Each structure stands twice: as structure tokens, then as C-alpha cells.
Image (cartoon, rainbow, N blue to C red; front, side, top):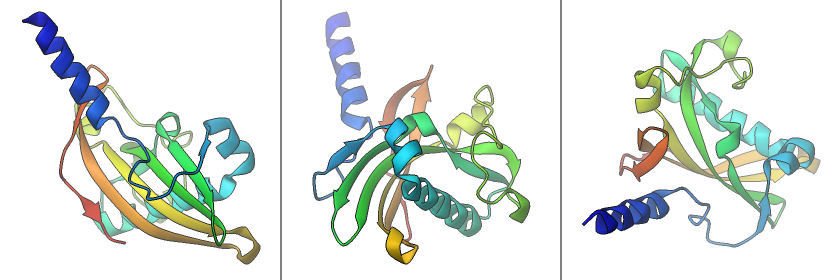
Length: 164
């Protein structure tokens, strides 16, 4: 019986762990070092998505993306098309104009606060960057709640936030 329960749990964890499979095309997998060193337009796009999210939702505390959770692919097509899955969570910073575009290093997330954990979301984002035009277009954003226990993701619920 224990073996069956472990297999079911393993299936759920693997089945609902975010990937960039929502993107219709396959592309180059980009790791975090490459994002930080070569694809700063991807980070700028994530900042744009979060600024829009924080503004639209009127949340009290600013949501920030968790860098270690970024799963990204790049497709070269009319520019850099990025397909990104990323976890976002409410930070300790108020959602004010002064805190716009601040990242987790300036606005940390309190992971010992169960409320912050309960409000954590996985977002699937498609964006098109054309650096030569200084232009980033957000084409899709779908966010889902994350149910966690002891840091293990059990389920991505069907709550959807899609404004694009």
C-alpha cells in the first residue's frame, strides 16, 4: 500500500511540476546564468509582467519572481520569443510606485509566513523581445495557484489569471 501511495505522489509531483511545455514551439533551453549574463531582455520582460500584475490586482504587497524557479526557452523568430514558467510570490515590500521593478534582492519574500506561501503562483509567460527596437511585447500570461507542503509542489490548481 505504501508503494502505491509513493507512486501516486511521485506522479502528482512530476505531472504538475511547471515546464515550458505550454509553448507551441521548442527552443533553446536557457539557464539562469545565461539569463543574467546574456538575456537581460527576458528579465526586463518579467519585470514588465510583474508591474502589470501588481497594478491590475491591486495587491497590498508587491509580487516578485523567484529567480531559482525560472524555466525558460528561447525561439529566434521575428526577435527573441521567450517561453517562461516562473514562480511569483508576495514580497515584504508594499505595492507602491517607489517599489516598482524592484526584485527579490530588494523586496524579499518571507517564506516562514504561511500567507505568502499560500499566495504563491506559477506563471506561464510568452513574450517577444526585439532589442533593436527597444521593444518587449507580452503575448500571454497565465498564472495558477500552487499548493505546497514542506516545499514540495503537489498541485497547480485551475485558478487562471490570463489577461493577454
